[in-house]
Length: 297
Image (cartoon, rainbow, N blue to C red; front, top):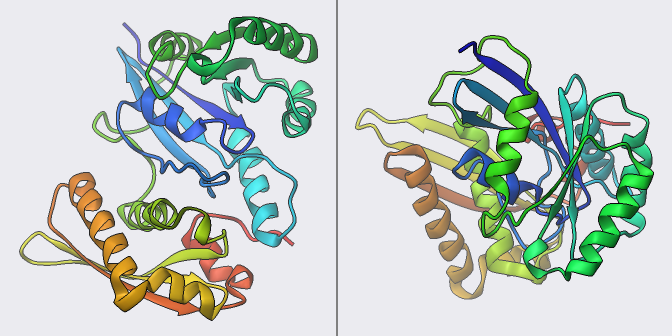
């Protein structure tokens, strides 16, 4: 059987479950997940395999109304990720139904020429009548080639979606080695894992005025890796929140991130975290390169 390989752009509103779905399709974690909206900031590719087919899944930031330079850069990453895609998968939070955020996305993708697939996520917590009405309404607005109902959390429907995506991929050699699950570098994944723990530990206490900058990523002779990261925040009060009383919070964040990184990288990890107040970090071109975003005027 001939090899197949192609690219699927996974788009949707914030918190639709795109990253959870990409992880489920790949079969392991490649994108960070958080209850907070807009967790994904950059264009990150997960690589799913099915038989002789390689499906490159571009997990894009959730599309929303941009207010800051970072917002504009994140939205630009969405459409850059969709460029040259063999299919676009629109992931919709079925429990939320149709809303203004979804309307904006629908308007953008309706005019695109790529095959479009509707993926209704979180169907396990959505009433059947609401699902049927949402499917009818969405298909009136966009010419979807297929509609799938899934729960990325439980895995229901994910195998059928994966098979359908694989069937749409064109014939051609694989673009990545068989054992590679993401195009993200270890350095980038390390920053993403720490950022995820920052969100999970602090919940609503810390807004999105934070970023992770990797100062040093050093391979040691004993096979371990030493990672030095700066947590950038906008105000001294935010620094105090990240540190916690007596440094307890940053130790918890560091321990959780270190444990997960050791599992992801398959080696011992020495993680050193520092918190720095940098009010204008969103205007740092170098940091945008570090987190994989283009500078947008």
